[in-house]
Length: 198
Image (cartoon, rainbow, N blue to C red; front, side, top):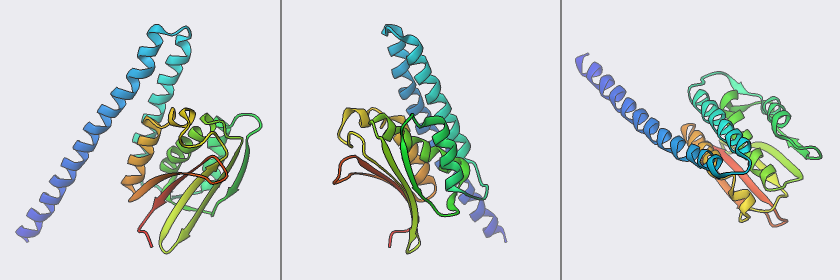
């Protein structure tokens, strides 16, 4: 009995240490990324735009923090995508969605992932997005395919700072990975794979 208590205490201590380390890493990432738009505001002809970028960054960090602690039921990807597109989609953006009824993530986490993937595609000038999710051999994959300027373009890379880093870290908390690949027809495929590979 006593050994069980000691073992559980050791596990809890180890988990707390890992969470503290992750929190410290997260704080360093946030501070570094926030400095960029705030420094730019000091020398920019359009400081309001720079401050707006900083505020959007803060919103993204808060969303990610909330999502990390969300233990709610599985998300409806179609409903989450509708919310994301309502906020981010420019006029004329064509979106094709091939989504199941549910995806094995809480809605808050899925919203952060989709928001960052869609934001990068739009920043790279995408006019068409294909958003899909499917399960194969126990592994779920959420993908955003775009026809934008491509993975190597500065426009796509400009969105790859804190947004994609948050996406990678959040996916990792659910046993997932983020994969970015160029599409043969042009544009980029951004995929979040959750669960064990086949």
